[in-house]
Image 1 (cartoon, rainbow, N blue to C red):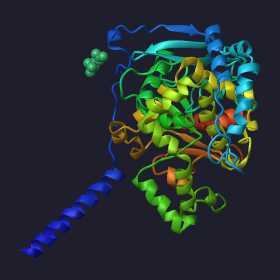
Image 2 (image 1 turned 90 degrees about the horizontal axis):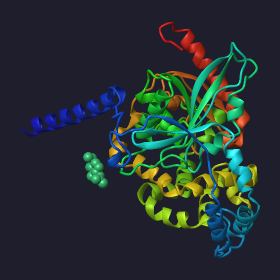
Image 3 (image 1 turned 45 degrees about the vertical axis):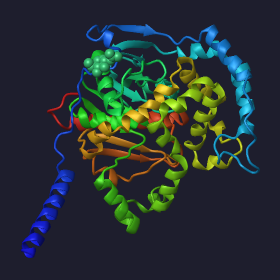
Image 4 (image 1 turned 180 degrees about the vertical axis):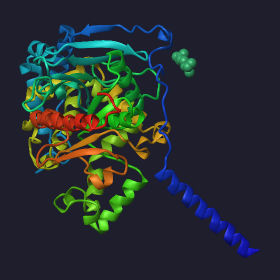
Length: 462
Ligand SMILES: *[C@@H]1O[C@H](CO)[C@@H](O)[C@H](O)[C@H]1NC(C)=O
C-alpha cells in the first residue's frame, strides 16, 4: 500500500513537473485582449468620435501664475546630511536654484512654441482622447516612407523624442528610407486622457496604440520603446505578430522562468550566458539585487499606492521637480548619486523643465503613477506576455548605464528573430533624450536590417 502511495506521489510530482516544463516550452498562443474595451466614462459609450483633431500645447496665464505662486511659496526642506549628495534622494541644497529657475527664468511662451513645433493631434480611442505627434518625412521622391511608433515611459513624456524626431524624419546618408513618426502620450500621461476605471496597464495600452496606428491608416508598422515604452513594445510584438514589422527596444528585459534559470546559470559560469567584456553589467547578481533594493522603492510605492504619492506631487511643483529629477539623475548614471548636483547637467535645465511642464500643466502625475498599479495588478500579471515567444524581427540597443542588462543568450528565450544588438559604452536610461543622434542612427540601422529581412522573405509585404 505504501509503495503504491509512493508511486502515486512520484507520478503526481513528475506529471506536475512535466506539465510545468511543457508550459514553459510550449506556452500556446498569447492571450488576446478586447480591442474595443471602453476606458472613458460610461455616458460616452458607443458615441465615439473617430475624427483626428489638430492639437496645440497651451500654457495658460492662469496656470503659469498659479505655478509661480506655488514655487515662490516653497517651504525649504531641511538641509542634506553632511557629506551627502544624491544618495538620500534629491539634494535639498540644490532645490533653491531649480525652483528659482523655473519660476523666474524658464521662458514659458518660448517653450510653448518649442513644444508646438511638430504637428500634434488628438483622436478618441476606446473612450480616451489620445494625444500624438505625427511628423511626415521631408525627403526627395524615391525615398520610401516607413511608419514608426515611438513610445516613451515614466517619468518621461513625448518631450524625450523632440531632439530625435528631426533626425528620424530626414534622409540619413546610406539609407533609402526615412520615418514617418507617430509619438503618442501614454494614456494618463501629459496630453492623453486617463482611464476612469481600473485595468489600463501596459498590455491594454498596446491595444490602444495599435488602434491608433490603424486609424491613421497603418496596418503594419515598426515600433520603438524605452522604459514603459519598451514593455508596451514587447507586448505589442507578442500580441500583434502580423502587424508589427520590426521592434527596436532600448530597455530589453524578459522575466520568466527560463530567463531566470539562464541568469542563475550565468552566476556560476558567466561565459555560458554573457560575453566576458559585458559580464559586469549583469554579475555578480548580488550587485544587481542591491541595486534593486536601493533604487526600486518608487516602483513598489507607485504599484501599490499611486494616489497617495500623487497628492503631494500634484500640489507642489517643487515636490514634483525633486521626485522626477532624482530619476533623471540616477537613471542617467548611477554614480551621479555621489555628485552634489546629481550630474543633471547632462541635460539642459530647459529640457528637464519642459518635461516637468508636460506633467504639471496637465495635472497628470497621479494618473501616470497609476500605470504601475495597473500593469502590476494580479489580473495583468496573469497575462504574463513575457512567457510567450515573439518572432517579430527585433533589435536591442543597450546603453552602458541602463537599469538592467540581459545578454542575447537570455533574451533569445523570448525573441526568436534577433536581427542585431548594439551595446553602447555610453548613455543611460533616457537614451533618445540624452544621445539623440546615437539613438536615431541605431533605429535606422535596425530598420534597414528589418527591411532586408522582409525582402528576403517573398511572402511578407513591406
Ligand atoms: C460603467 O459600466 C461598467 C460596465 O457596465 C460598470 O461595471 C460600472 O459600474 C459603470 N460605472 C458607473 C460609474 O456607472
